[in-house]
Length: 66
Image (cartoon, rainbow, N blue to C red; front, top):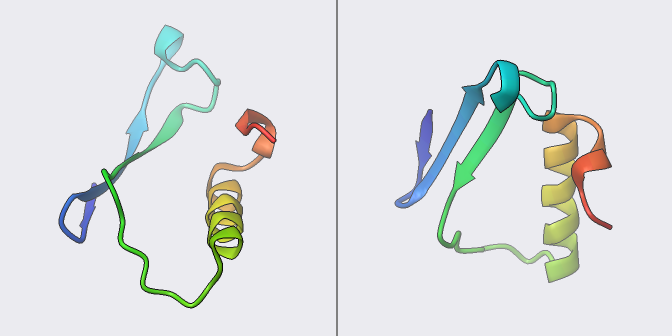
């Protein structure tokens, strides 16, 4: 588990059996009420960057809604 800033917590959790609903065995948990943004990127650029990061880490975007 990694604590980042004040209220941001990042952890990888492992599940087996019925709890492993996606069949991957590992799940990313990000808990954060709000994360302040100090960047000159546009809102759309930030959203795309986060989506890209999650796709790189989690693999296929098949679980995302378009």
